[in-house]
Image (cartoon, rainbow, N blue to C red; front, side, top):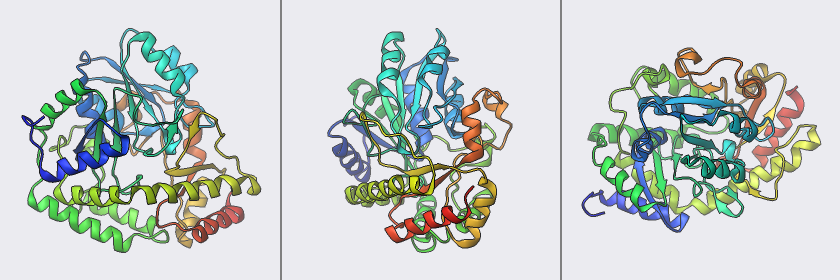
Length: 386
């Protein structure tokens, strides 16, 4: 791989990331969606092919597919696991299918036995969307190790934050070789961009607490649209238009943050596991339905999903009281600014996903949430959730 040089920081990150998975190749991109875009290019799928994905995802996933020259095709979700419905998936596979993207939503592993069987039967590449998952396992294997490649997000609210950023990962040497070649063409952030990321990372560490999350998220989005800070997504991207500088690497400040986060990853995993298990045990006592358990899976929750009948009112109440509640997903393609049809989504085509958008909130498990705060969140639900 020496013919495709990496910076010293990129080499160190690659080693630390792949050490967690025991083997493979990792490359750090500006965002997880960029890793998906590059991975699709490296697979050499015929242009215009259909890429299947769940109709309960972030809009930047289908936009990455579109930017790479393919058509997104959506499959409804299992209402219990929020992952792709394997029965409906079987009906959407055709001779036009170029790949299947499986998302491990909220950290819950998808039904990989059935999905990998379909992929093998039809000779279709499997891609794992691990933006919600880092430590979850399926049949005692880490999520992210089943597909031709997987992509991860280092966004502020993901498993560990790199101040935005994302990762490509594969265990296939030939695919890794093609990715290294592509990576050489990825734009390197300027010194000014790196400084801006460094300042944003510092601001996040000092200003964003569970009690201020809703307020700071709103402020961050406003500043991002004004171009004052580096936003999670550009307005053009959310409208389905390829933004300038899309195909980029991580900035040095993000790489530094990534290395710091990987040094304490076991502590992060253990903390999220503990908080997620606490929610799982306590929610039934408040008459809330929990995520079904499976002998095949070991879930480390990024967020714990809960259905309520008064979602909008509850979120407003939580913001006023300084209670951190998440609201993924507001639409089947979360974050979209253009009509869903722009992204080839037909309203009504994924009713389980659309119903989940109306009902599901999610509870935080990150390192800033201790057991006392988790109990405070549950007490809030007990008082105000319908």
